[in-house]
Amino acid sequence: MELFDDYRTKKLKNRIAGRWFPEKRSIVRVLIETIGRSMAMTLRVLLRKEIGIESYNFWMVLYGLLWLRLCVALSAHYARGMKLLEHLINPLAFTDVATGIINVFSLLFLLACIWYFLKTEFGSQANLNVDSRGESTLLAFLIHEDAPILLRKSFVQAVIAPLIGLLAGFVCSYFPATYGTAILLFGSSTALLIDEINYHRAMIRLRRIIISKENKARNQMAELRKMKELQE
Image (cartoon, rainbow, N blue to C red; front, side, top):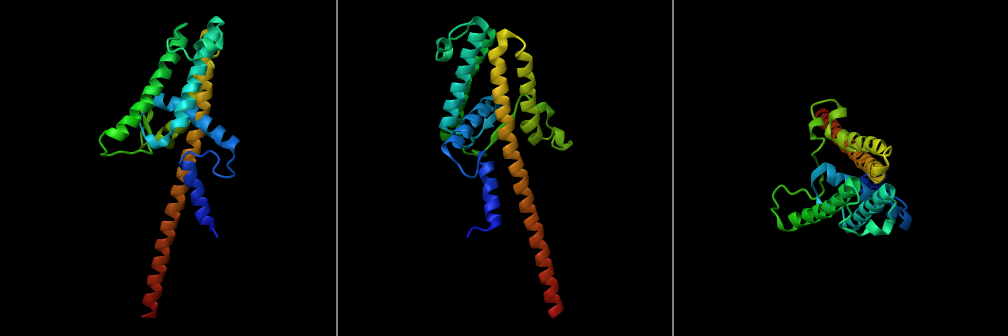
């Protein structure tokens, strides 16, 4: 029979590994999780560097690319009234500035994922962290580990970055030419917020459990030493 401590820590480790639904996993839940993490991955690639290859998989790259291509098509549709399929698979979609930017980003996203794979497989293995969710680039100036929690790495990556994306999406939604960009920012930022909070909350809880067990073990050892001293 599985003990409660084992069940609890296993559930937290599954969340740290990226599972949104660590229990009662069904095809629908797995699909929602994969698509959501794929959308989050598109924004993570934009905001961070040194992303570990084990933090994503083939399906996340595929769905992330399809999500970006859909946003390219939506951008062209809302800006110029063009049919969605005309730009969904067109690598040279430059109907306007917004469409062109999303199109270029979709190609850079694919190249970045391939680069992380090649770097892991054929690059130096020194200081390799395949589970890394990446280091902030655009928002690195906000991070100060000796500052209050609002400026620490975990909070900046889990909350501030997605909220900035949502705010930018809200601004873009007011302009027809950037409506596709707004959809991209709304979708990816919401997914990133969910994915990062799921990860960091699990990390915090697991760390607390480990520290608590260590403190409990030290206290028990101290009590045992006292008992032995009394018996002697």
